[in-house]
Image (cartoon, rainbow, N blue to C red; front, side, top):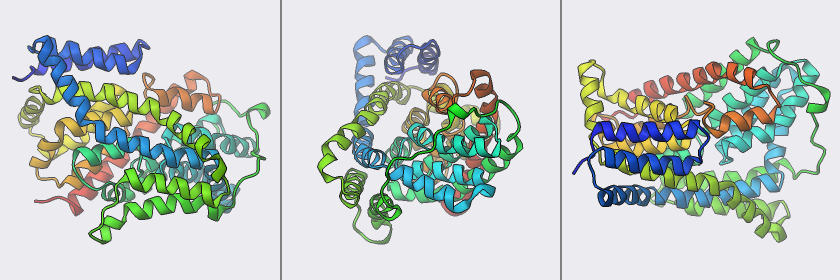
Length: 419
């Protein structure tokens, strides 16, 4: 049997409302999935089966996210990501400080650091520079958030892992396919940040601290993530395909070895696991809702609506990514639900698997900063910005995501479309 379109949408709506009301996101999504299945015509037993099937389908992504925690934990705890960001900003100098801040966050996210953590890591450096140059908090936070968004769509992070898994395509291919959109995202971020350097509150002296802790060398900081990325790309030039489950932990172990922290490996692994637990639990809740949506008529109804409105079916890729990120305020949840639900229809529209995965991934970046998600709040705390000002930044961040999505769609249609 199929769950009705109304049931699937009603369940999604319930989940959104509960998240906005500050209920635990995982339970909100699970409850929304259950209500959606029952309202959509399935009995309790069938609804539970659909939820379990959806969670089961998401398990490969969860395993890869857990593996990514090894690299992320080692990069963070050894100080490697601090060193990388400091060197980028130092090399670009004060005249290009906004670009340096954006690039730093982009690169940290691109090598596998969680977006929230990447912003929190670079924020102290950004505040120190912002105070020195008399830039506003809004400008600094936009540089952090926009750069992080750009890095996130070319990263081995949970959102990219999910779309690669659901479209059954190599992770490295999805990462490289969005390189041009990511560069465009950096450019629009820097342009807009410079427009608001004098808007909003100023940075106070007690809010900025220069990092004085001892950090590893730049070369030892870079070796680990470069090894992981190199292993991921082996499949693009040979018949040997190395899964992220293998490639990402190897990069983490290399990092602790070259930085001289091998004795603290267990501590770093525990930290990395703690960083990924929340994401993995969220993915389970996301999977249950995706299971209901997959078993519903929503896909067919959406395609019919596109036909009525005379909208090309390939636009289902960016639209689904954007809408699901709007619903969940999470690039991870948005990319997961959109790719698991609409992947077949997107491929049937004429897009290749790489194109579909890349566009959905870019689309999921548009609304991830909305206030019913974690990014809104963690990024605000990172620069101690007033909530009113934080709200004012949302349109700018949306524009960064929209530009990347439009560019991604154009690039994929030009390079990777099958017909």
